[in-house]
Image (cartoon, rainbow, N blue to C red):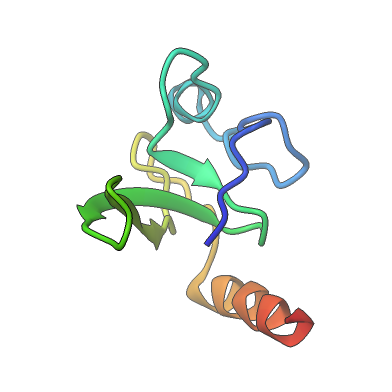
Length: 91
């Protein structure tokens, strides 16, 4: 999965507009944010590391359904599934 970290918090998805805390976390410039908007339009949170074939560990990501700071619903399981299905149809 490819994560777009170039413009978090400044996109047309509305993610990060519910509260300042989420916007700040998504737009961190001094660190790699753990909450990111992927190219498929799904908001993910990194929840762990996994050893892979390379020397660097890979990130394990999970869709974020509710803002961890204010509790606002950000996306539904159905929306995530639809976006995942769209991506699968394009490949």
